[in-house]
Length: 250
Length: 318
Ligand SMILES: [Fe+2]
Ligand SMILES: [Fe+2]
Image (cartoon, rainbow over all chains, first blue to last red):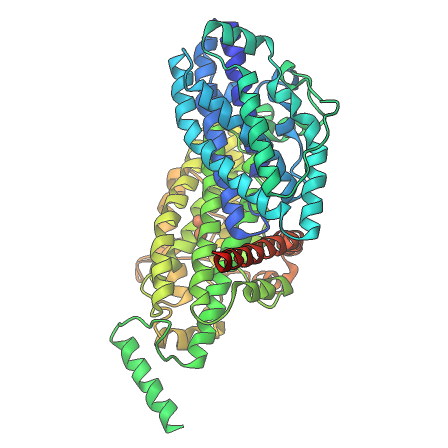
């Protein structure tokens, strides 16, 4: 078993899984029927990505586990998603800000991962990139629409941006898994992802008439399994059936 | 008056000739009103129907089931969209239809006022609720109003997929542990009777039926559809190894149909009137989504107006 590769794959899949979970919470509660459907589309894409990646992680792990074992039977400290994706939905605008901040990263990340020396990762990245290209377009458009909409919407977006900003630094921190993946040729250099991200954020914020928050202290720990309080509740809900009725077919 | 009468006669002859009525055609005011009531009620049912199943998206037991359920609930949102659009062709706006739902003036299918308390409910809803809906909707694919009929054709394809997916969830439970089989039986116990009620009141009490049949909006009575549903469900229940909670169910050699027990119409009317277990929660969830989304809709509108203005100014300069 290649532990570094396993951790690296889990890092990517956990991000998709947890963000997909959060977006699923909107299903049936969206502000506009068309946007309800759009958020669910993104959730479906992300959970689909997570499944491909968990299936691959199970193979790398080589102990006969399934995608469901990895999603449903790991505790908080084993989850490696960044803190940003586990943050609560808040109002529609704050969901859009979280999505946009992550999509801009996700897009550049997959774009680089297409060149991975690992064929499976490269193939997953190529398929996911198509999906994430659409996600980024969707969230960018809504950033602009709500940022440059009414006074009220502008203020709501600026506030959401200010409060989620502290979770963006972690996106570009190289964990041990990131570093060894890069060295082994199957990983992504997050500093190049960061330059794309900086540019994209500036471009869209300008169009959205929003201010880029000042550089301040950044929260981190997700990649090492140190999470905010929110992840525990997510997993409690998500893992309820598998924990209550262990080892059954559904 | 003679004019209206001849228009009505002509309208009826078009209907009788099985030609579809289209939005621009002349139609009796009562036909229009009946359709608006029925299609919007149908659309609202799709949207409110997302809530009980939505409950289980984040608790689905496997990733495969989660994706299946998420996609299913999303389909229902799509059905709502088609139906609101069909309704709008009759000269009413989506916003007004939402207002009618939120104020309680418009109804939606009472089945969604029952709670989903276990995972097996997701299977039972697919099998029984989508199943009962299909009976009605297959008939509506041939309804006299063109846009409604066409919306139903698209919807029916997805509904039968939902039913198969639900049944397959139950089939898996039926082959599972004792706990899983108990979960399955419990869900069927709770959903069977409300599913029979979905077809609406029985002949004597059904107010809209006769006229709707004449206009070919409907082609079968509530009781005919209900009987069809009972007949088809018996064999499916046997395969699942569940007992349908009706001691009076038995095959009638004379009629060639299954007889079934008396429906609790008192419960039915109470749930319609708002006394079901979840009426308040369901409506409150819709009202909340609408109120909390107001600023989003306002902003989208304001932005669109700004953009239009910018465009026209730019074209002046050019
Ligand atoms: Fe539907
Ligand atoms: Fe359905």
